[in-house]
Image (cartoon, rainbow, N blue to C red; front, side, top):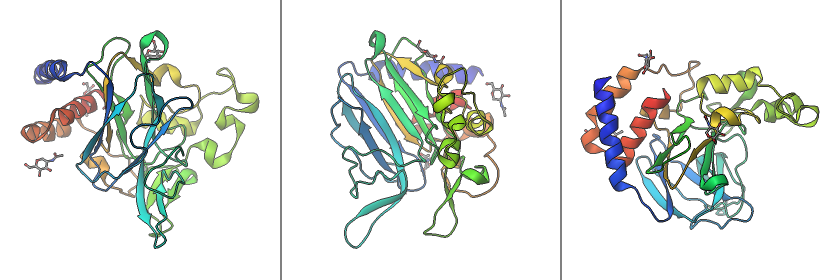
Amino acid sequence: MANRQLFLSLLSLCLLFSSGVMSAKFTLVNQCSYTVWPGILSGAGTPQLSTTGFALQPGQSNSIPVPPSWSGRLWGRTLCNQDPTGKFTCVTGDCGSGTLECAGAGAVPPATLAEFTLNGAGGLDFYDVSLVDGYNLPMLVVPQGGSGGNCTATGCVVELNGACPSELKVTNSVDGGEIVACKSACEAFGDPKYCCSGAYATPDTCKPSSYSQYFKNACPRAYSYAYDDGTSTFTCASADYIISFCPIPAASQKSSGGQLPVTSNVSYSSSATANLSHTSLHFIAILAAIWQLL
Ligand SMILES: *[C@@H]1O[C@H](CO)[C@@H](O)[C@H](O)[C@H]1NC(C)=O
Ligand SMILES: *[C@@H]1O[C@H](CO)[C@@H](O)[C@H](O)[C@H]1NC(C)=O
Ligand SMILES: *[C@@H]1O[C@H](CO)[C@@H](O)[C@H](O)[C@H]1NC(C)=O
């Protein structure tokens, strides 16, 4: 515990010195054992970023400047391929553009989403990691150098595909059965009760279902159903953001075992300290965030 506090204080100090003041920046980091193709969709009325889709090899990161007041979402596409005609498609998170860039197209569910509204009400950034459109891979959002609000890491850091309820499972038709994503109950059944639509379109009538509870139990800070704002929207002023795919190395394997990974503080802290000298500030910030989330 004492070690952890000392570590976090040093970390805050480092982040203080490294914090940018001018424009915001997203740093996307791929800690998965496989390639991830991030997709980026700007909200209506906000500018496109310099890229809307690219490949990120395992261990790679890429920083993208973000204009003030930007809003939109980011996600990870997996198992992507280009066919002989040059058409680019992905087994999960595909945006249907047929190219590496999503160019204004959003993710086809199921996909884990990181959602942002920068400089919103009160000058605060609002952000969340959402499983409302299902889940395809672990994602973590770590604010850096920001202040105010409840400026803390959020995300779903565990691998959920293996333990996805069978009614919600998505398997890879190409390789014959690997579980590659987990649908939301709304997408799987189209029932207004799960979609918070029709007669269920208010917070009073739309309650968490056993399915959304499955996501919520595994990932308490992630947005799990339409009216989950209170526990899953975070705010921060003047921050940069690290967006990590598969922040926990153990969760990056696409296992099809039936169990959620067992998370233990001890094993993550020892692997974290063992690798400190090899990691950049980004990785240190990610490790610290995982500490808070587990
Ligand atoms: C974070 O702060 C916002 C704005 O004050 C609030 O709406 C939200 O419920 C808070 N989130 C959490 C997880 O406490
Ligand atoms: C992890 O740490 C939290 C408090 O930091 C503690 O409550 C929990 O029991 C720990 N879990 C394990 C598996 O050690
Ligand atoms: C940890 O360090 C070893 C080298 O000592 C390196 O091979 C490995 O990739 C590192 N792991 C991470 C997650 O950075």
